[in-house]
Image (cartoon, rainbow, N blue to C red; front, side, top):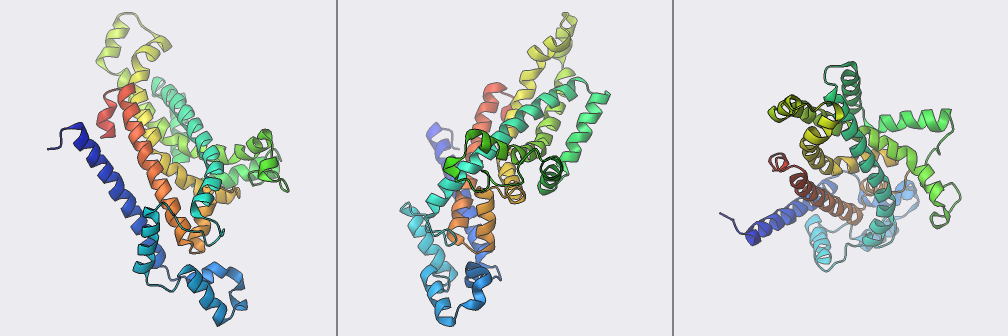
Length: 328
């Protein structure tokens, strides 16, 4: 058995590497198996305007006519040297595209992640403390409704209400129309960030709320809470000192585990709000057969999810040692 810290660390690293390889191979296989002509996807609507010679030049430039295994081997060899390749869509190194798009997506997803975690935990505690009351039923119903609502549907609903009907928020984009990204003020960026972040936050609240509610209900029915009540503790003081820590551990683990779902939701939210982030770049890469960009995004996303899960397990054990069982 692997009992030493070094052996356990080596095993975890091996798992991370194997998962990254599986994600990359699976993504490449799906792209290679696609019936879409890569040259046609690259050219787009102008495919009828190019001749056979231009088609051959495009295929030769990007290696689109090479066998799939040869293309993958060439890409993997470059990755081992630190080169993620060049994006066919943007005509820039994949690393540069990822850095530019990640800046916009990071602000969106970080805002939504924090808001959904804080709001979900607070409402979950409230629902658990008021279990069986009207407050609990309303919050639970709201959580189940949001859990079953597609992200794009929530985004379209908010877009119609606040942008089209009320005119309070921009229709789309990360900065005002006609403004260069570097010239936009912080207030303008936050104004454009508000609605996409609200969409992801509302969708992400449900799992944290429901799990926190269940943890609070179980904690309120535990022996140590009954003993505290017998000692005279009541109200929110009892919840603060005897219940919150028991509920916080699973909530922390779950919050970090939802990073992957958050990225998946951002794919749809960025399309609805035409937000120029990684989600929009992923959609373009898939539709236009930009294999180097798609594989780069897949690697970065998988790595972020794996690191997020690891951090969640560590913090969960710190907050509540019993969360280690849930995180295993």
